[in-house]
Image 1 (cartoon, rainbow, N blue to C red):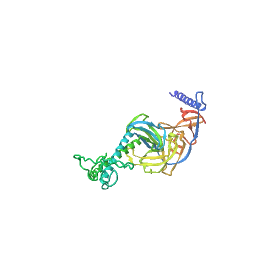
Image 2 (cartoon, helix red, strand yellow):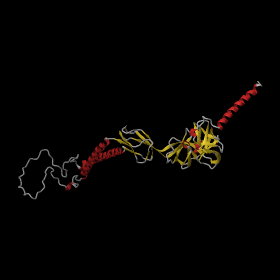
Image 3 (cartoon, one colour):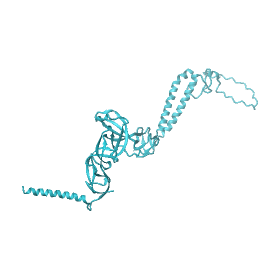
Image 4 (tube, helix red, strand yellow):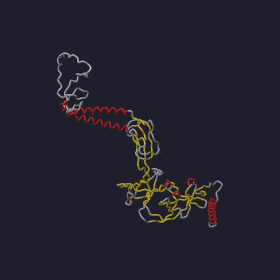
Length: 411
């Protein structure tokens, strides 16, 4: 056994050297099958950065509108499509309901009739002639059935005819003094007291019909749906010609300028939150692009299950780059302390699940390296493990690199 031990050790040593030489050979020059990728490279730096409270959250629209139908009908016109930007007051969709205009005309006719009836009874109750607008006692009663032809000055007066006396009709009572000529309105011939008693019911009918007309007019106007703010159409749930009924959701409009970052702040950090507190926000999905905002909402209640406090940061987003559902990292400066950190551009980071990697450059080879990251500072990311100061990392062209080691050349 003692004689075999040196031999075994020698074989192991040779094998290790072989692997090392193979690895070195690959680093020294690419083979005929190896690809050379053009990439951009940056050098890590060591700087003092402020101690901050860093919290992760999700972006949500600052406004959301569900456009719902108020009636039963069909989609006459759909003016927008998903992803389209819309302005406040812009027409989104029109609903066609042929029965509403007819119903409105009927209601208006009934309202006019009710208003005339109310006016008629009101004049009777106040002793005013509805036809002439004068007091009853000043208007003598005339027989409405006798028509007198207008005088003609050119004709000679006719000889007077001897009137033929006819017996008065039976069971016909003489109208009381001040009575109105018979007309087409209801309640004709009623006493002022009776007419006054009908006024509340007449007024109630007028009020009811006015409300019905207003409601129908609102429904008719509601057949044209408008955007109430500037935003983007996120979902369209109907098509032209589709039948709809009240409460059906036709489409959704959201506003992501500004956009809101929703945070669940741990209880131990909740006392540091305040409305208006400024924050820097980095977006990993946008190569750690930097944005600025301030706290716009702090929940009055603690989530007892999570032991967190819901907080929202409102962030201007004029170019619409930040999308609802993306993740964001808020950085809140709550102290004046700093610490030394190794920083690399955020664009150098690769994320695979919950792990982060960078490609560290050694001569002409990019080596995939696992890293532990810390805070974000401006457009840089703190690396706690995996990269040292003054090391080079790949920052652009990462999508080409698939292996643990890749031959590269700088663009």
